[in-house]
Amino acid sequence: MNNEPLPTPRRVRFVELNAKALRALADGDLAAGSAEAGVALDEHFVGDRARWIFGHRAEQLAEDPSAAPWIARAAVSEPDGVVIGDAGFHGPPDEAGTVEVGFTVVPGHRRQGYARAMLKALLTRAAAEPGVRTVRARARADNEASLATIAGFGFTRVGEQGNEQDGLTLVFELPATAIRPD
Image (cartoon, rainbow, N blue to C red; front, side):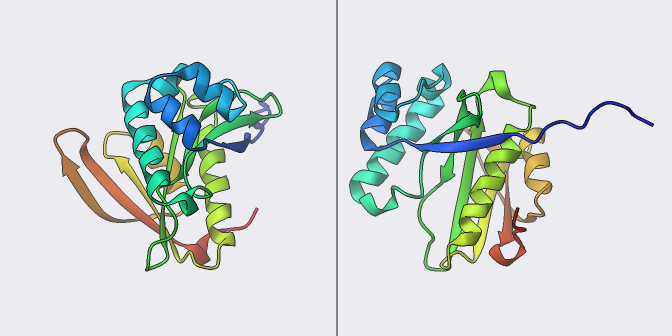
């Protein structure tokens, strides 16, 4: 019998990254992005890939300000208030009622249960929205941690995509009706 205590489930809250914060991060200005968000963001938020993603999200908000409640949030660990990553949806539900989740854990906080906490919070949000019928998630085929996180919530693999930059990406879906409440 193992006498080690069970790990305490991680808790996160989300802090909106508004258009000004997203633009600052896309421009590589961590101080301005942090000031606009009201939390101390990690260097991860101005890495090359993050800058591209946040630039894309800033453009998305410029085209459709109503998408703001759905996209780009800093994930903050509770109760300590440390920013441990970012999460959100790729946008509001599409015509079929599908939303796609996205989440990244800052390297220094990986393998501590934060991805699971972020995905759980995103799924809870999606299930509470009457227009959401399906939640989609994608992960690179070689990203074992993300694949395990997704599998832990009952997603079903529905396809795959590939390109030279990202390699093989697996696509998963979960009906909103299958999302278990807390």
